[in-house]
Amino acid sequence: MNHGWPDEPTLRAALTLAVRAPSVHNTQPWRFRISDHHVDLHLDPTRANPLAGTEQRDAVLSCGAALHHLRIALAAAGWSAVVHRLPNPADPNHLASIELVPHRPTMLEHALSGAILRRQTDRRSFSSAPIPPGYLGLVKERATTLGANVRQAADATRERLVEALRTAPDADAGYRLELADWSGRPATPDGVSAHSIPLYSHPGGVPGIVPVPRQAAPDFAELLVLGTSTDDRLAQLCAGEALSAVLLTATNVGLATCALTEPLEIPELRQRIRVGVLDDLAYPQAVIRIGWASAAAAALPFAPRRALADVLDPFEPAAC
Image (cartoon, rainbow, N blue to C red; front, side):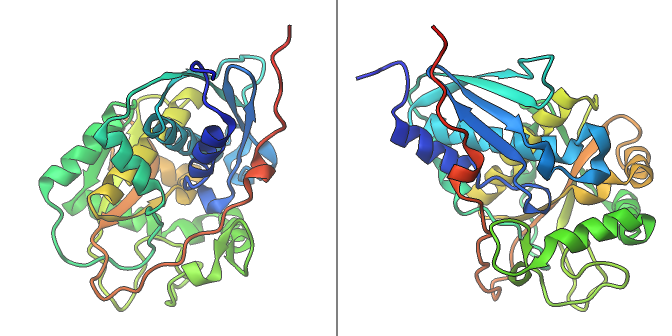
């Protein structure tokens, strides 16, 4: 028995949980590779949002969420991940190399691992039940430990954020085309399925995708802005890990969430949020709607995922 490396079923089970991570438009822009002594995470540039340009910020953020999901799944299975981020300067798409050491799982790691299969993106209106301050403090704390900060948008700050997000569909034609391409799909292993989109309309936008729309049912979601002090690829990767931690923490305490990154690919809109919401002190990486799902809300269908074989490269033995 190899006590220094998990067996194949353990690795595959952890990777199956990792790919449950949220991604922009459910594009799932990641690839994994397993060798004798490490697991590698790569960004798949063919699935990156063209609006993001060469930085591919939202795809890197998505891969960071998958990385955190993988770390949590492995920890719950008895393996602590030693992560080397951006290990190859010659290959910016090689986002992480992960070594594993035996580990005794904590109750929190088991709880967060269990939350992976319960977490869903809920685009519906949330109820008016208040979120205990301790819950919001907890998600902020978890993000901070991973190199990001979370600010709750309230009062005038919230109004500025909502207005900025509402202008997204009118701000960029490419944004509208990108939403239309990945949204309202039939039964496919990626994209946003038609049955995941609430049945209401929003002038100038794609139904159910544009955040905080003008709709008949009031939405009492709290709005959190996740930001980083820098905006390089490492910061974006860590922001994705922090986003995963926020979403899993919220799920674990029973809160519903919806992460929004697409509007931040519009430079002018992102700058408005940076200045008007984050006081020009941080780069916004994601907006998170968080709250209590309505007690009368039906269960959501789970978003599709590509097969593990489609995102896992063949095993590569280490060179002698």
